[in-house]
Amino acid sequence: MAKRNIKEEAKELNEGMAQLARAIPGVMKGFNELHHAATADGALSTKEKELIALGIAVAVRCSHCIVAHVGSALQAGATREEIMEALGVAIMMSGGPGVAYSTEAMEVFEGLTQ
Image (tube, rainbow, N blue to C red; front, side, top):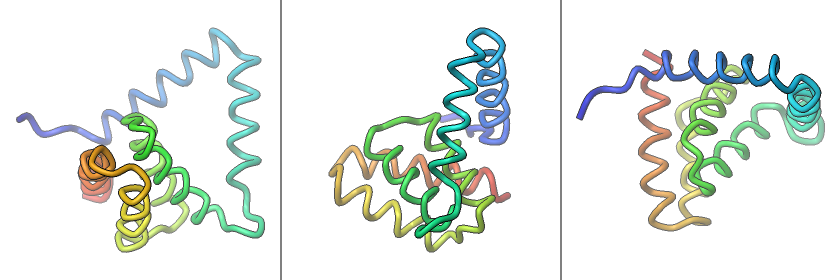
């Protein structure tokens, strides 16, 4: 199996989102505002919210979301241990598929931190 270039995947995802912003600016403006409002510090920190988002990304089996939210969790200061615990909760909520997508999240973590 070929080794993934996670940083390149993250770049491509960001480029795709920029293309969407040009094609459907109103929708993407609203999406970005929602994202910022939902992840802003409050009773839960941005880091905690990104860990929740990562767990949901694993549970709903969204590979691109996993790339995005591992990266955002890292930017918010999440540690490897915190990410692994979030994956544990995702596995609890989604069973076998959660295990498979958690291995993907671990690969993304390694790719973004090397």
